[in-house]
Amino acid sequence: MSVHPEAAIPPPSPVNGFNAPEMLSRGHFLEVERFLESLPPKERQESALASALYGQALLARGDLARAREALLDARGLERALARRGELAWALAQTEILSNDFGRAADFARDAIADGYALSPGFVRFLEASAGAELYAGPAPGETRQADFTLGAFDLIRLPARVNEFWTTAVLDTGAAYSIVIESLARQAGVREVPEAAAYGRGLHNKEIPLTFGFLDRLEFAGFEVRNVPVLIMPDDALFFETSRGELPLPMVLGLHLLKEFSVGIHYDPGRLTLVRTDPRGPKTDPSQNLFFVRGRVFVRASVNLSGWFPFLLDTGSEPTLMTSAGLRRVGLPPSSKLSPRPVQGIGKTRVEWGRIRKAAIGIDGFLLHFRDIVVREDDAAFEDGIIGASSLKPFHAQIDFRRMRLKLEPAK
Image 1 (cartoon, rainbow, N blue to C red):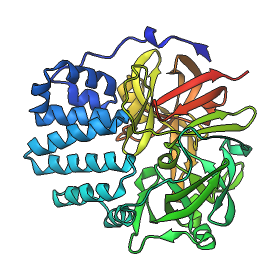
Image 2 (image 1 turned 90 degrees about the vertical axis):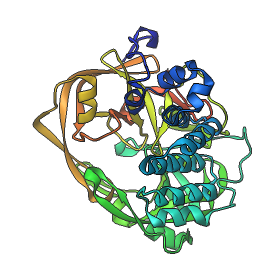
Image 3 (image 1 turned 180 degrees about the horizontal axis):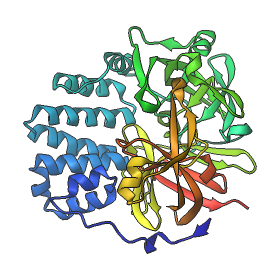
Image 4 (image 1 turned 60 degrees about the vertical axis):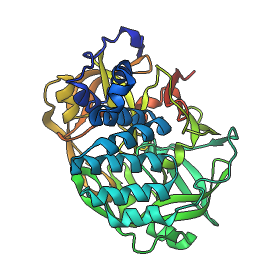
């Protein structure tokens, strides 16, 4: 680990009217937003493409009110049915992050009517909580501290009570929603949404059966939270067999819950500090380095002193890694297959990963030096890599969803 000011990273290519869609697809949200704001407002507001790009950039920043306005402008101007469906789904995601599942269901139905493929079970999940106050209970500014254990896999484990049933939960920013296994859902009386069967996807896009539900009450880290949306998965989907032994996970605390807090992680000693916040305000911090994409959170990282690249921020992953798509975008050679590493994911999915030699990944002004880094073979991935616990452990990590900022301080 070494210190390297982010100002020393050469900026990416300038955004212009021709490359703005590509730059947005590569995760250059701040640069695309600045370019579009440099245009006369009337020019941006009267263009379906410019309004759509602006709304998508603001949605990634978590600036939900302005994102909604721009996306509604774009949908009102757009005439292509497929693009209207994509914009309706982007609006649904804006409402999901705003915790307004009823309005999200309206946009999801619009997206389906325009030909966008969505699971009917997921739409019923959204409809089931229309009008409910999700994550009710803790007041803004309320702060709690709690101890956690890591175990052999560097996963943050802490006690949690689902309704009246105590269990162990893993804090996992890489999971879009909180998850409970079926046996825990039965024991704890989780409120399952009728006719809401769907499929999730594991490694290699293997389909995993699931359904949706709500926890009437969840207690963790000293907080009591009501009306918590969850995915319900088969027990064996979260049961892992590794070279270091078996790893059963009865429950995962995912991003959609954790975004309601500022999360401080002190790996040594194992201590969490959580502050209830409201993540839905305007986002104006030019140093923002966290972004929402496809229901997940990404951190802006440099690779070998070149920037910028989106890495999934995943406290539920032990290794830090790159994807084959990321190697190509960074301009690194393909990974070596001479010593592939088998990895097991949710739902018993398996994939063999390669590796490359010598890489330096930069986050929040720090360079993490790797003699070897694992590569996940996924040429279609949006993410260029994953920041896992192995990279966070040397720091006190502050994940602030109000400012959308990951702040790192070396552990002492």
